[in-house]
Length: 366
Image 1 (tube, rainbow, N blue to C red):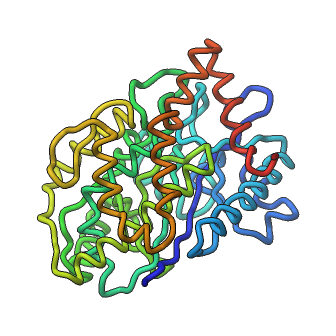
Image 2: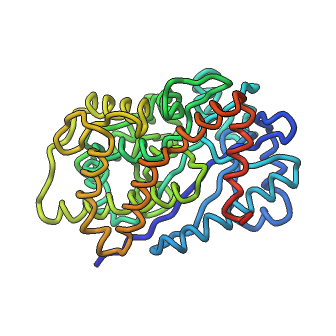
């Protein structure tokens, strides 16, 4: 049995404890005493922090690592008078992002322009799954139709700058402003992937391979596929669920290729339609079935996902984790639905920010 390693990067916001608005203090936070020795990093804007786990084969070990990394990030934020918020878009009105003073980030924003650059002031969950070079690109090709369901499970950005967007994941709507973001046509092999990368960089749409913001891409630093479709999840159990689903998708695709069982690729315009439906609806309405390509109720689409992944989940011993996690989200709602419920009860988006901050800390405050 193949047990692939999985690692997670979580991007989060820094929040002013008094105003509940974003505060640009990541430079001071990452240079706090303990943070200097750990996996805490800055992002494109000074209002963000990023944590990175080590690679794991056991979901329980991954969760423990995430708890400790969130604890570190929260302590570092609090050391400079801020709070940590695991949420995908700024909930309250805020000033524009203040660029982190690193040459690459400054160049990115000078090239892209201010309006496009603000699409970077969002937070995602990026999952790395270990792969061999020979199989990696074919797996990226094969998992494309399944990624909208991963996005729907993680939906956690209904509000943006004080407004209800009408979307479950507004982050994805913003992020697609980057010219190198989104779904892709089949690459077929490593050579095809590398050719597309070279031509996109030559076009100016990407500064380098790190700006290839495909829904799933080859990591430039690790022997992994990086799946980038998920919102930053407030509840840590959602993050672990997304990581396990991503791992199982990669392994299932690899086994199907070995059997010669290759599903026909989707046109990129149909992928965009499926992505739009997932970020618009989350799990509240219908989604696209990755097998039949029909629009079906969300629970039916997720049932297809579970059937697709079940052999790998059973072998890995994570079937209950994924089954229970999906049932929980269908019954209780995604992060997006939780935010709207808090807003409806309180009539105040500040209460939504407070709830996000509390739940971000919950795993290590218990």
